[in-house]
Image (cartoon, rainbow, N blue to C red; front, side):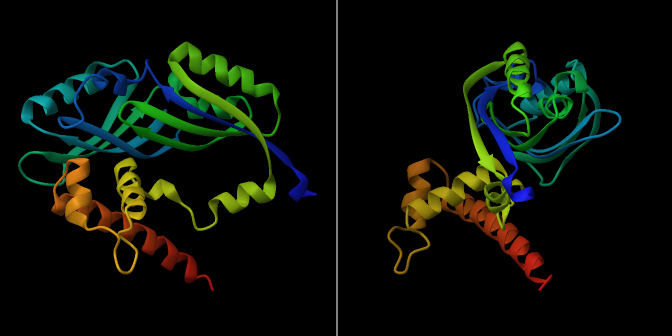
Amino acid sequence: MENSLTFYELTAHYVHESDWTSKFMDVDKFHLQISPFNSFLSSEGEVEVSTVRVSSKDVLKTLQKVLRSHWKIKRVLFLYPINDGYPKILKLGVIGDLRDTIRATAYTLGAIADTSLYYEGKEFWSILFTQEYGIDGMRRYMEMHGKVLDLNVRKTKMPDILSKYEFKDFSILTPREAEILKIAYKEGLFEYPKKNNIDNVARNIGITKSSFNEILRKALKKILKTVNDSLEDF
């Protein structure tokens, strides 16, 4: 029966040292933030769509230079600003070489690159295998192209896989939005009466109240839209 199907879930925190994003490992996050929020495979390569924040024109020029020169970037699909002035927020789309992609390698090994997050130079991967034989191959590939910070494998059943994603499409959030949402919940901002106030929380993590509010508002709007879209099926 389908419900008895066993999966092997590999999870790992990973520094992808051969990726173009590694060129910015030593750049302060105040000056440059890259938040990939979607990727998929195409006949040409791996399409990656990101939100990028740059603090100045010089940082933008550095970003453009890396995009033009790095071997993994086959083509820049778009790079356009969504606000005036600096810091500037940009939408970035690139096609990457399939010879250096976790997602394509997972598919080759008969697995599904189920979840990926990127934050401050580190990637988090959750990869599902139906057979154990591909796990060592995935581990060796990751070690060849970067640094595995930790790697775990656990057995899981089909019902657990399905319940993990029921009304939980976290891929709609950027890593920063997910981080702010978790902080807001942990600090009691959703309690009534509130256990804390936004001024204190924003100050403690080093951003302005308006920035905290804006990121939190965007995260909540995305979640509510996802829930509303799900309810339309009933």
